[in-house]
Image 1 (tube, helix red, strand yellow):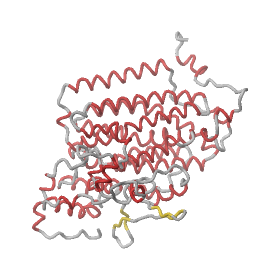
Image 2 (image 1 turned 90 degrees about the vertical axis):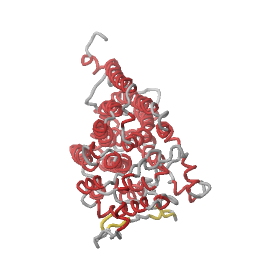
Image 3 (image 1 turned 60 degrees about the vertical axis):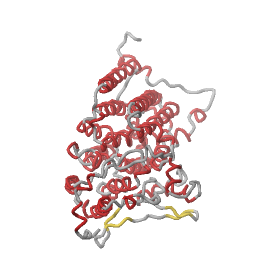
Image 4 (image 1 turned 135 degrees about the vertical axis):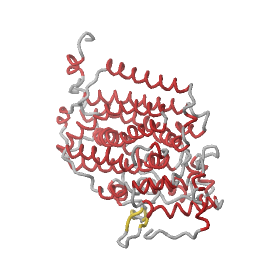
Length: 505
């Protein structure tokens, strides 16, 4: 066999399957794990991936990737490249290391689930390679992040973050547990390989890699680019799965994509949006977050699902409007509640940066400018207590992010609106109509309690900011703080001038 070319024998081995005679098929592939639903069992015989690979080829390719990535890392360890990076960019890497590393390990569990319960032999074979990919992704990210622990304790959250009750950790666990651990494998293949990996990891791994190179962080750019080459291969599990599901149950296919898209968009607004539009040094920004989203998500991803005969998600208008506000609001919230973070959120609102923000987002000054002016005045007046939280904001019961999404009213004013819903005598609060609708339809599925829920239930003691920070696992050496307040000095002349409220704010 080893003397044959792969294309001469793979068709014989890639789809090895058989009919069970000693046990029912349902016992081997139970519905609650497999989720074939309305799709006839025999329809899965047509499942076929585009990118075919055999184990010897896989090992050779991965060995080459590993050698390249670690060679660059070893060379840069002898340089002072890390010391020359801006604190804002370092915060971008800390967000990525903490927020992504153990998600890669959770993806191992997702791939193994498909490798066991996938309804086609070729699918299970591809998922086995996918599991190996995700193990590699977790290991390489842990290893790259560990190098900096001795230089900055916040990098220790590369492996620690998901083991804490930090509100960001709970939000991401809620999202990825629902996408990777609890679903059946049909829904899983559409939510993770197709929606999340084909769509949103391109944003994180390709777009952020470009910003990393511009910022001089060759090490980080090399690491995430190496990971993305794997994502592009095993993400193809979603396409053939979606094709079969659309044929037999298009309503289910549309819903699974819609909710995965929404949850991913909310998470990336918190993690990727601030990194691109605020933490990346102004001179190194390739595009705005919105521009990256329009290129990688709006154009490419929507074209992909429309090719399968599906339509744009029902929340599309709300999502498109959110590209101008979600991440700006979340950035302001992250900066204000910075003691609850494991990175140093720079404000990113110097005069030049505000000019750039106004150019990219015409409504930025109207919605956010006067709020930042209040913060700036407090900093320049040495009233730092006014820039720190006394409690936590209300968190959305669906995405677990702060309810801080502004919308434009008929009277021309921007307001943050609550979207409540009462169920079984309990009132839940949501940041957007999209989160409320998804929670309602999936209310019997996995839903972690928010930090606010836990606080009100008495789980956090003492019931003050100190108790909250302790519950989240934050210690003084890792609590976030703006690394440099010199940006506020540009506005010291404002203290002698009465502040005029921005019209319509």
